[in-house]
Length: 132
Picture (cartoon, rainbow, N blue to C red):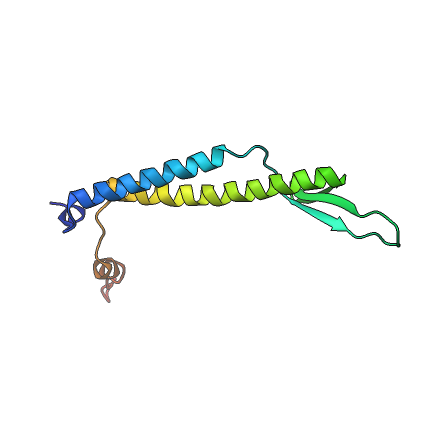
């Protein structure tokens, strides 16, 4: 019998955990699919430099290691802010999806047997005879 098969935890426990992970995965998957627009970057507001002037809005983002800036209207700035917020929510959900996927795969499939730490050390520290 392999060491990973010698678990004292009952199989129904793993099945229950796997069901919970799949349910969490489906919920996160649905949350990702409901976003209308997604953008990366940030929207910046620059206050007017003189009294009576207008505020200006810019959208900045990285493209091939360079910062790209685009001027926006006030309406565009608000829409871009919402799309950026939605993108951040999707990124957070994707991180959670990856974590749930990892946990589910590690729990549901058999792993490899691990060597004892001291046996690996013994193999590396073999002595060489003095006459060699």
